[in-house]
Structures are given as structure tokens and as C-alpha cells.
Length: 204
Image (tube, rainbow, N blue to C red; front, side, top):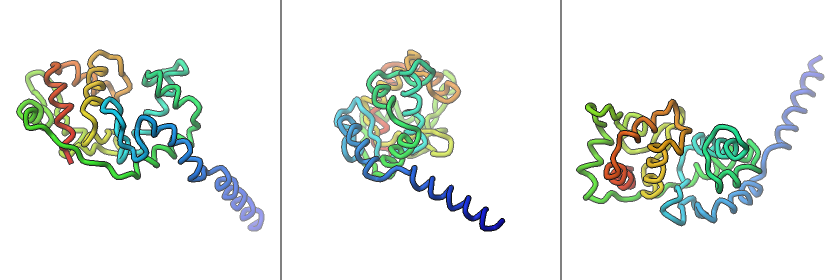
């Protein structure tokens, strides 16, 4: 009996090993991502997100929701990313997420001109307008939390952040947990969105 059990265990281990992605396969898939997100996870344009150092759980979630949306389900609608995610297996999505998560993130900077508007909102929100403080989910240094699924936003490109806050405000993007980002963004002015977007670069 013990020999039978051992044989089953060895068989499972062998099948798991055989199905695991090789590093070369992940590198090959990442080459397609590099056209926008850079070989080192630093986007080539400010309108694209930096992926280096981002939580793997968050990256994997976005990939799954891009794929879901392009296939007619719920998720995050984006024609380009939907097309990129559609052929990816669940295993490859997780592997790519780990690939970029393990890359070192680069720190940005915060223009002094936006601190007066952005810092009070980031650290304390606005009680009168019922705006939650960004720090509650993303932390004092903008690192977010892997377990809760809140992304790292420190050092992120300002234009990308601005585009996402605007999309949350309009409802164009709606894949946020319990609608929290939509609730916050809908109460922000254009000037506040612009200031917050630029403020995050220097958090580290």
C-alpha cells in the first residue's frame, strides 16, 4: 500500500514539474509587454504604467480582467491590453506577474507646486466631501498591500495615474474593489486629480 501511495505522489510531482513554465517561455512572453512597459518594467511613455515592483497579485488580477472584458465578460475594458491578455493562460498570467513584481522599482519625484493640494488629500482625505484618505489603502509611502490587492502607486507615471482617476470618475473603469476608487474619484476636481497624479511619483 505504501508503495502505491508513494508512486501516486511521485506521479503528481512529475506532472506538476512538467506543466511548470520554463523561464525562457516567460521571457519570450514578456518581450511582447516590453514594447510599452519596457524591458525593465519602466514604461516607455508616461501614459503607460510602470510594472516593475508592482504586486504580483494586482498585475495578475488586471490581466485576468482585461481578458474577461475582451471576451464579453465583466472586467477592465481596454482593446490593446485585452488583445494582449486574451491568448495568455492562467499560469502565464501568474508567471508574468511574478516576473515584473521581482523587478526593482524606480523612485520618482514630486513637484513642490502640487504638495499644497495633494498632500492633505492623500494623507487625510476630505471629511466634508466624504473623500477617503489615499493613505488608508495605499500606505504612507504609496506601497499598497499585496494581501488586500491594493496596488503600489509610488513612482507611478503621473499621466497614467491621471488617466485612471479620470476613468474611475467617469465609470469607464469599474474593476475596483467595492467601487472604492470610483467613490473617491467622483468627488475630485480636475485640479485635484492632476495634483494627486504628480504627487505620487515622489512617494517612496
